[in-house]
Length: 372
Ligand SMILES: *[C@@H]1O[C@H](CO)[C@@H](O)[C@H](O)[C@H]1NC(C)=O
Ligand SMILES: *[C@@H]1O[C@H](CO)[C@@H](O)[C@H](O)[C@H]1NC(C)=O
Ligand SMILES: *[C@@H]1O[C@H](CO)[C@@H](O)[C@H](O)[C@H]1NC(C)=O
Ligand SMILES: *[C@@H]1O[C@H](CO)[C@@H](O)[C@H](O)[C@H]1NC(C)=O
Ligand SMILES: *[C@@H]1O[C@H](CO)[C@@H](O)[C@H](O)[C@H]1NC(C)=O
Image (cartoon, rainbow, N blue to C red; front, top):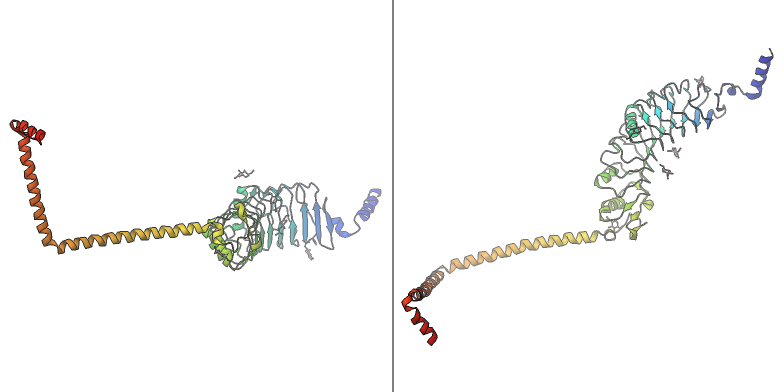
């Protein structure tokens, strides 16, 4: 009897409102804002039996290593789940499939190493926003995620944040199963290139954020890929662009593109002389292209002059042959004369040789030489 009275008293004291009675251990529940908050409580698992009215569940700064299908049950009214900074390493199959109205899922600041291919699938594809900023442990996790995006049936996804994940490359067609994606954040990664097909299938894209990566330039394939996205907003600032002649196709694209680019932030990082110069409007000879152009022109003129020289020589040769042909009679006479002359010389020589080679006559000729 006494114990019962104490419990009732404590109950009234601690839980003046009815929702408090239902609030899980380590959490705060707010009926008016329909929010449950479990912040920095060293929880090891997602708390169970949250009040039925809850729309927003905030579980941050805990020690939850794994989420699975048992983590979120009886939460059909929940639309927003914030799970950032919980050291989550594993997401099992159908982790969120009981959350039939889940629109916003924040998994940022975790260390996901194992993502099941069907970790993100929810019947009816209600999810609209997924935040995976600073949450992928390594490249294996990225491959897992790519599969999960493919198998998750995320047709309703509008916003995806993959910033701060040390991503060096994006698997081709990684976003091709997100047909309604509108905003894609890839800022603060280590991306060096965009390839043909990197953004294939994302025909509804409105915003692409590629700032704070390590792009040095955008090559022809990358520019085609960006061009294909149409006149959407593309953020390309804060990358270490190298303003040498090779960057001129990118400059030309910036000059002419109808996409809404943050051109003020797209600046040269090197060479020293051009540091912080805006890329758009950069003149070709400022980036050392003129030399290349001149060299090309020079090369071309040289080639032309070789061809011309060849033609001239050929013509001269033909004229020479023609003249010879016209003078064939004169030539014949000349040849005959020449032959006769040669013969005379030869005969004289022969004669002399005979004298020289006759030992009896040698001293005579020697005497003659001495006398002469
Ligand atoms: C969801 O909310 C509705 C109305 O607010 C309520 O009737 C229902 O019981 C809630 N669901 C759960 C699982 O509590
Ligand atoms: C994702 O979460 C990070 C950190 O929690 C936050 O800074 C960022 O703004 C979020 N992204 C979006 C698109 O809201
Ligand atoms: C990523 O991390 C997991 C778990 O630590 C490990 O098993 C895997 O080999 C790592 N993958 C790479 C590419 O480093
Ligand atoms: C980028 O990510 C690193 C860690 O990956 C973090 O320390 C840094 O604050 C982030 N920078 C921005 C601008 O978000
Ligand atoms: C970009 O535009 C500037 C003038 O606006 C022009 O001088 C420059 O040659 C253009 N660059 C390229 C590569 O087309």
